[in-house]
Image 1 (cartoon, rainbow, N blue to C red):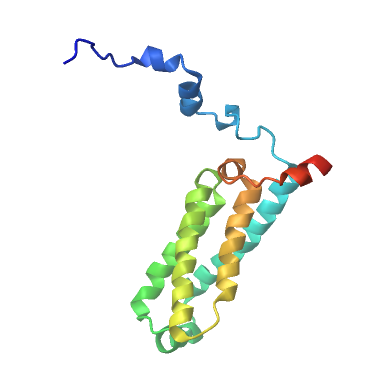
Image 2: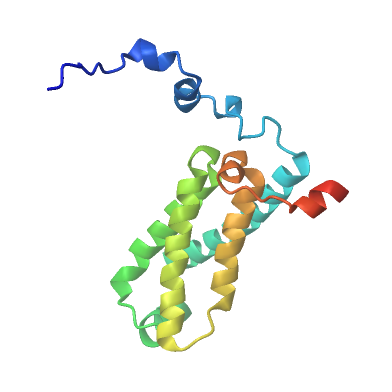
Length: 168
């Protein structure tokens, strides 16, 4: 080559850099972009919305598990799904809700709930029914998580414009 040998940094070299330490620190609250303190009102509001949404989705999953005659009729005739699809969809819905309720897996749960609701939207579109309520539910899923989860707020910061920041 051209006589200069390239040396690769060792782990000790990397550990000495502040950026590396911040990237590998397991405690996310030591990171500068994530607030160490969560406003109590945000947390409470987020959890209230989370509980309401979770009860709604849990009720929906429970009805699929119970499988009353009215649901069987609508499931096959109106929605066009085979009867055998009811149980797997109920299990998927319940699993999404459980993951959404557990703080450690809440973001994964929100992603999965969003996918589940996407299927519900597709069904409503296919049969020609309004789907705006399902879209609103999906938006509230993320709003609730945003309010209760500082890690998500660090990823999606909402900033005031400069004129508001000076006056407020």
